[in-house]
Image 1 (tube, rainbow, N blue to C red):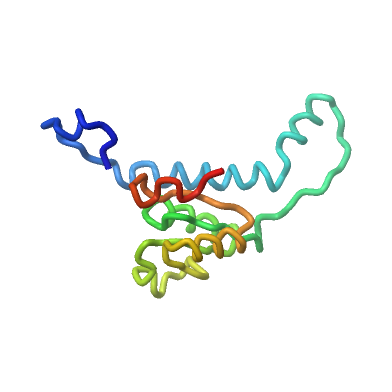
Image 2 (tube, rainbow, N blue to C red; image 1 turned 60 degrees about the vertical axis):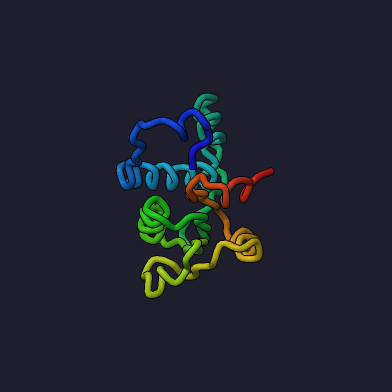
Length: 141
């Protein structure tokens, strides 16, 4: 998926770094889920104001993480989310590759109906699908 005609005609060798950042991105994903579940902005504001008023937070355990793009990054996120006790719903171009996956509760194909179903079932969404012509505009405002 090359977005520049000049790069497309270049003799430069293009590679990727598959797996190099999967663990770090998985940790970031769980931090982002915690950010919302624990209402971190409120916590930081109250700390600054020296306001120790109690407030309710949400547990990640029992919540559902929807993963759009269940490749290396998506699988690394599923491993951590599973440890947190989250339900995992994934969207993958070839869902049959996930048969018997102990981390996923459900794996859907990549059609629009499956995407809508994943969105309706999930408390948190991770988009880790590759940037391709097929995925362009898949998730957007």
